[in-house]
Image (cartoon, rainbow, N blue to C red):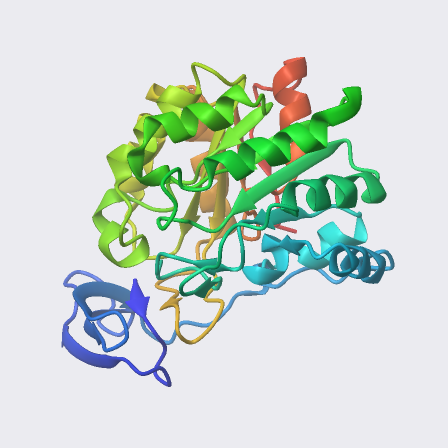
Length: 342
């Protein structure tokens, strides 16, 4: 994992090469980031180029402009655009989106994320109703909601999550809701407030392996995230998590994370290639081959995770409704789902 590209404001010092491999294929690099003031040593493949399978597929997005306009008209944000998701054209074209609540500024500075970092304003009390109305206008019967991390709020934004769930499900509607939540700084009562509101799915991404947390998820704690999923699983029918690959993790470390998630009762897992969203973010250490996703998917399901969606462009909300339908219908749970490898 590397912070920044050559053109980024990062000091890079080659300190050695890994023995036993092509001496030009792997560099050990020490990094100092003046912005976040962290120092760490990682490995990165030299002469790294994007393979064809990490480019979004070309497709018609005839409905995408209407979706963007509707969201703007209701003052609603999506993580699709804020995080520069590579699938946003596909999802908008199918009139789906993941709503982003609690503002557009995050109180943490995760190395992988393109969402703006800064001091957020007070929660918008009209936001739950606006999200619900936008969902109705889009004709959604499955709604995915996420947020920035709000460490400035005592409950981490849990009350707003609960209000959004209530508004979306209000009036006797049969709309199903999936929430992708932050870790609420480990405050269990905040998580309980969200699960009590009745979402069908609770997703919380561990993002990467424990060894890389200091650079990838500063302010977060791996065990805290696993325990959150375990606790949520007692109250919600489906729990999910997701990981980005290509940040410098090792195969054995990924397998250990999958074991932990299976042990925590996690029923679904998404695995996708990390793609550097801006020059200020962590750079890609390696691009995985399509066959590697297939292996991880098969191993994950052997470990007991019922649905593993793996592929270069897979993100945590990718095909969310399909995954939920499969899990609840007990349909095809014996095979992995591979995506984005055409």
